[in-house]
Amino acid sequence: MATGRTHRPATRSRGIPEATVARLPLYLRALTALSERSVPTVSSEELAAAAGVNSAKLRKDFSYLGSYGTRGVGYDVEYLVYQISRELGLTQDWPVVIVGIGNLGAALANYGGFASRGFRVAALIDADPAMAGRPVAGIPVQHTDELEAIIRDNGVSIGVIATPAGAAQQVCDRLVAAGVTSILNFAPTVLSVPDGVDVRKVDLSIELQILAFHEQRKAGEEAAAGTAAVPAATREQSATDQGPDGDVPAVMPA
Image: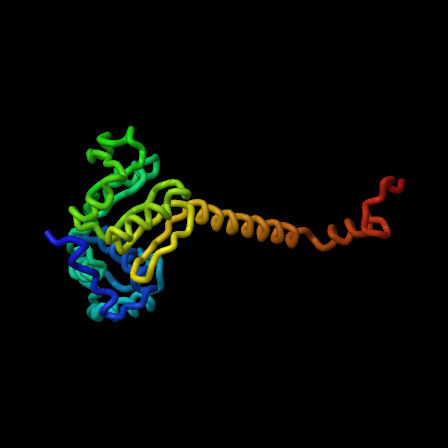
């Protein structure tokens, strides 16, 4: 079985823009759902809606893959699943190590979607000696002392960091020194890596803060809309009830 050490995805060499690459997993997820329902073809409009993009952007993205669909018929679902999977490098086995088997790391280890998407959890690694040998998701946890040997023996090129922030950079350095060239970072810190190493960061607190911003803005818009809905006569009466400096008088006139 091929491993991540000897094969790389075709997207870089084919000149596909990074923005398009970022949307390919969205298309693949939507197409996989259609495939599971035995839907043979899909229009660009239907697929774009399922993926949350506009149809013009979808057609442009697919043009980089050399896939243009058939007028009046649409896109062949199974062929697109294969084509996008090939571009993303998912038609081969990618062994992955997860470092840091706390609550988050254990949840990731138990995630059932890795295998179906071309990834195999090759090892679970933790610095706590008490964790060594303990099975998580059916895989025995190994100590960080074995990190380099695990990466070498399994041909690992993708590492997942789920450690506390203070340990993340040291773990990252060891992964890179051992030959890992792609890292998915769940630790709440920014990692420093050399050229040629790709890092994707997943920060749940940042995502929640962005949602809080949007909630606050929506609340402000609703409040503004409520003020605008008050009849003008009422607002004018309210203004006449105020004192010379705009304050409500302490004693209202009889």
